[in-house]
Image 1 (cartoon, chains in turn red, yellow):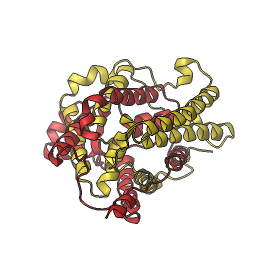
Image 2 (cartoon, chains in turn brown, red):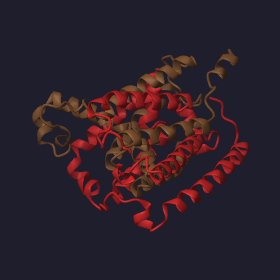
Image 3 (cartoon, chains in turn purple, green):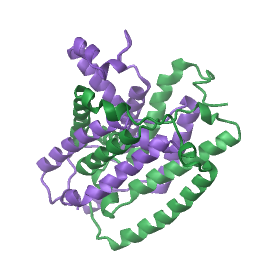
Image 4 (cartoon, chains in turn yellow, orange):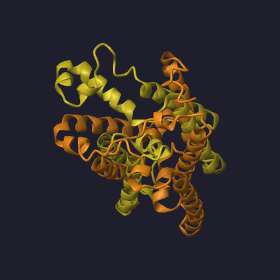
Length: 175
Length: 196
């Protein structure tokens, strides 16, 4: 049992993973002229849901209406296809290493319920922040840094800086 | 000469297929590097696992050096690339909110998706949270609009804002990163091990 649990944690060497990720970013810029992203697909999903529930409301809103264009669905978008790929790719990697399974991962010191509440709350904050900064860790920070974007560097420093500042208050959840 | 799709070397119709292939590689790399585990991700903030830091900065440096080289050798026109725009306070405030979200939820959107793919329930909840966050932002958009659209400096790079030579900057950043990698290894040895 112990051996099996340990085996599940055999991941790539971080420098190897980082090197391949860097090559992938170069390739993405070379082909498409822009970088990777992740939160964009969630925005497209929200816009689609709101548009389906109340088209009028989406049309009237100053924010949703930016992403609705006539007959084209907001889901018909580069980032949504990329995200489908992310799900498939992660599933393949997880299958190869036997990491697939329904579970909630949390520190033994906290309950499953507490972990899920914090996961949800953290998600809400991340969703709001990613809209204000026009991108998340992938789209703004990583892809921005690759082309020396000032905004990308500032976003990266703000994310990691604040997370370090607040790490103390959340320590019970992790260590 | 790249980028290929903006220059119509690859027809636009292919972009969806290319998007899926690129996403597939992205998801595979994230998952295989262990980013589908929130406890591994959070390790960077408590010093017991620096994988996030190493992967993130290795990727940034490799892509910076690679893009500069490809521009220098004439394979890619760097001026055609999309530069993430700089909205000063949007980046700072948005980044700060994301930072708190990161340490509370343990995921960022990309890593969360890779964890959803292997069935992590906390990640599914996290993605739902992100969508609720986007919804809240959109509904309260008039409130956020001044920081969202304000303090706009254009699609500037560090070369414009600091007047720094990009080649020297990347060189110095690489040296700093290598030193930081060594420092993180030393920190990790001193910090109590956390098994997850």
